[in-house]
Length: 144
Image (cartoon, rainbow, N blue to C red; front, top):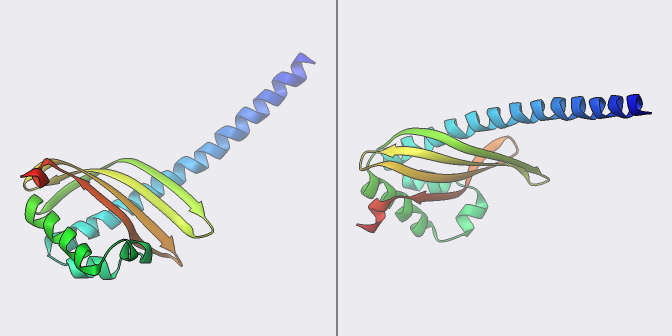
């Protein structure tokens, strides 16, 4: 009886490990994808392409405020923080639903005027296309 119980525990443990390793791979791939997307976002911020950022954002992002507010947000990021530099992903979460995949990543980003900016970015995938769903930036530069 104890031998059967131990065997079942081993089977469950093995199944969990196999399941988690696939999940870990998915997180790694999603973090790489999110990093690539934020590099492109930073290139657009650096090039003052706020209009393009807002035009290509997810519909839910667009509906959260006016287009003018969206454009002003990204112009203010560039004006206050300067050019974006290196961005390191420090946390990534992935959620899949019937509405597509959502990748949430927190970045520690170096900007020209602030070397310790935290960016919280959510990307929404639908139909194979990833779009900006949510963006939050934390920097003391906005208090000046």
